[in-house]
Length: 384
Image (cartoon, rainbow, N blue to C red; front, side, top):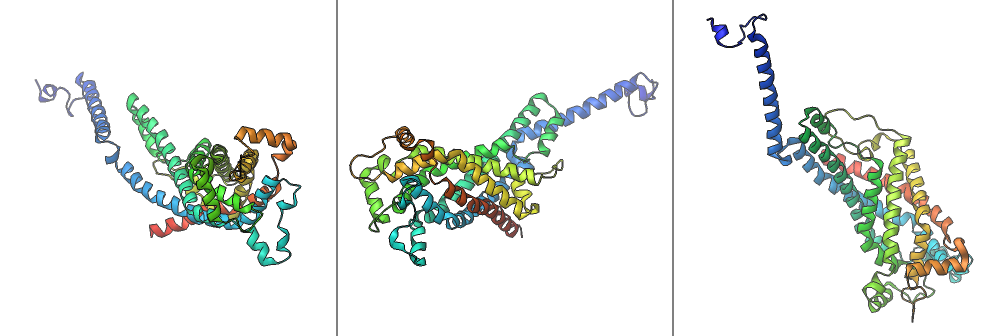
């Protein structure tokens, strides 16, 4: 018997030999087992030992810092941009659109210094808290987006493991950090809004009390003293339910609409297979013209306010009534809705909407584009 036949299908077997097909099948089976073994080894090694996941882990820390720092800058600029119109909005929400108190006090006269001081009265609480609020908001927002992306990809990986489909695994790896779908932006904005409500509620109450005060004797310290007397729920967290709903719905609509309009005005190029991608709002914004980002931000701000404005009116009235001597005029959020509707119909729930939309355009035009630009500048310096 020849050595070729004895080897049972070695390289010297002829194509006509009955052992040739066995040889080919054996090599194919061996290669398949080797590839499957490599797949199992990666799975047993765990995601943290995967070079792609290790790179992603390092990127998460960097992105987290960029999100918090960019939010701080955008928040301060946003407060200073829109605060005068916010003062007029709150006064009209509390006193009604037909009241002279809704505008500037009579003692301001035509003195520009007094007018500016009154328009910026109560600016300190939001200015001091905006750093924490916006860094927390955008930080939670970015991390929620990242969590949703990675979670969706992990589901693809699990499906690939169960089916032992290498093609599915490779496809999942190619889009591991791919773009979020639009509902992700609404959910991330809502989660960010819920996170900051614990800060915005007491800060908003202080601001509204000072803004609507008819006497200069009402200061931050007198308001804080009154809140302390009322207690945690009736004082510091008066109108917490409408505030948290306001933040969740408003910011969810705001973020989702902003991203949708950016994609509509300037579609992102398709991702390159086998690469790691950041969200389009971070990766692609540099190529998008500034006017498109400003337009998207302005329209997103208007949409956000239109969705929640009656709720914001109720929140303002509840907080303006929080430190009133004796019994409060409004007992609950529902009671405030009911009394406001009886007093002036739907129109009373939209008092000050004009000022709000007028304020929303410049503020929303500044905050998100400023956030995007700051994010890009910081990222560029960190990469140098």
